[in-house]
Image (cartoon, rainbow, N blue to C red; front, side, top):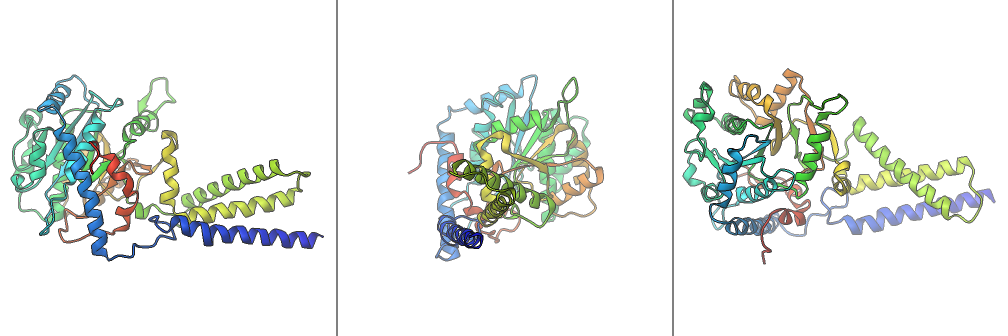
Length: 433
């Protein structure tokens, strides 16, 4: 009897596992980027790029429609009133440079999309009237950057090699290092990237906010950015254990990290994360089965074996579905976002406390040799031993297939297919046919 029951149990488990991993998940996940079952579309890379380009143009049209629907001069008057207010809580700098455009291709319009999203964010209930947004054009030939020129009618701006809509001289009085940003033009690509970033960061800090949010022009904010960021600033980055709340010391909060590097890895935190998924899934399943059973409760050894079977089942499911997709469940609530130590890459969206900016920009502009800006910033945090943090899942989408450093390089396509359906809804504006 016991042997027959054991054989029946093994057969049942085998059937359940086969249905899940050989039938259900392949059907559900074949079109899900970063899952083990993901299949590249049966089309060439050129056709995939064309499809992504078409999605990008839809977002551009939404962003363009958003700005054209604004009252002429209304946005500029709004930000003038914010600038003249006694307190600015957050300054947002959108760093932008023109991209090389292939023949028969339209401008990618990245900065239009980012600017529309950040303008809506600045006017959200959580950050309205205390957030200042400006476009930081670091193109050597600022007139060539047509998208940035268009945005001058709607958003405050500064040009590293040109004019500004606000008086930088007043803000930079007695700060002799400002002139180096406008006089240095013969820079290598990594030096220019770092100097550009430092310039925009310094200008953003000049408004004397509590925080500075640096956003690159190909990063679109998620629709939940405002309320998740507000919760994080008021809870994770504040020490509430004291009688009066004090802000924690930190170098930056990273709001974007490449999805392709967010998968399960062979380290302790990832192992514990998988183990917790398996334990919760196995425990809940065991309780449900026990409640539904129409017989006396099983022995402890039987319950334990059932728990282990289902725990392993959920661990394998999470592994095959992919951590990037599993983490999307965390978007159900601001309380579920994971607050963790940051990795060194990348700079698409970074929030800095204002107090760190002077020492960071001094470090960046006096480097003996230059490399990628994100690596230099990471080196600074290692030398100063200041903690850095990161939120998961990402609060920004990276849509810039075309690099601003390497004009001819198209990046890995899978990361741009991830949640492609949601990128357009993150851009405010009317429905685009």
